[in-house]
Amino acid sequence: MTSPGVEGNEIALVDAARSGDVAAFGQLVELHQHEVFGLAIRLVGDREMAADVAQEAMIRAWRALPKFRGDAAFSTWLHRITVNTAWTLRSRSKRNSADPLDSLGDVPDGDWLTPERAGETVMLREALRKALNRLPEVHRTLVVLKDVEGWTHGEIAETLGISVTAAKVRLHRAHVKLRDYLKEEL
Amino acid sequence: MSRLRCRKVRVMLPGNVLGGVRLSSRDARHLEQCLSCQAEAAGYRTLRKALTEYGDEQVAAPPWFVTRVMSILDRPIPATGGRALIRVVTAVVVAGVAVAVWGRRRLVS
Image 1 (spheres, rainbow over the protein chains, first blue to last red):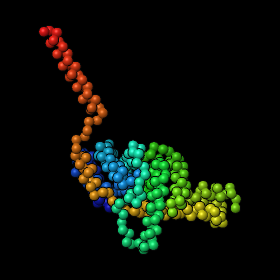
Image 2: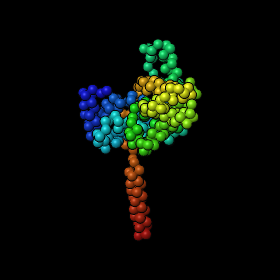
Image 3: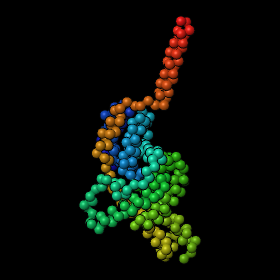
Image 4: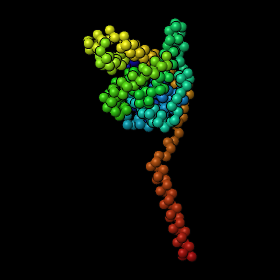
């Protein structure tokens, strides 16, 4: 949750960046880098490509800022750009598989977990990563946006340019496949 | 257990476990009694748990990320398709005029 002060500061930064203030945009990049990178890595499953996606998304955001009307929050707008960029870069690239052990470099040490719980968590995450890597790109995107990022069906449909019904039907299929793949990976 | 009921419940399970969609009382009763459907539901609960763990994982951008983005923004924007076309057309026109002037001079001399 963003505090009102931080939110107000962000609005001021967005206004300044819209009028061409590169330093203000730099602060926005600083503020949103981790969430954009996190979304990118979940969408593409590869750390190196996620860095490319996040970087390209930030550059696209800078170029599109004059058109940003502020109807949605800046972060929502930035996340949509990230999703579209991930689609574009993934379709350009032939690198679809990732080494799951290397895909998330900066993982917290989890010292608040008991060894059993930490072991179970790591095992579940790795199995899910492998299962997600086996899903078709559109299914992976739907699962990440809905189940991990918490987007609504409407937001997903709008961003991906499909109907809400299509989003629901495809998500259902994705869940069935993902459950089967997860079962195989565990 | 009715196979038809099993099939219906299994279609509903992803939405029920992952999306909070409520089962009808008849389907819920079936689920309570059908071991096969309970096993299916358990698979979706494991998936839900895995997705939660995956979403809770903290991911940090590489330390060089901001510097790299800002260094790209500081560079001049490369010529777009439209600008490149204008440059090509200008070059062709200038070359054409030069050739015409040179040819005319040769004819006069």
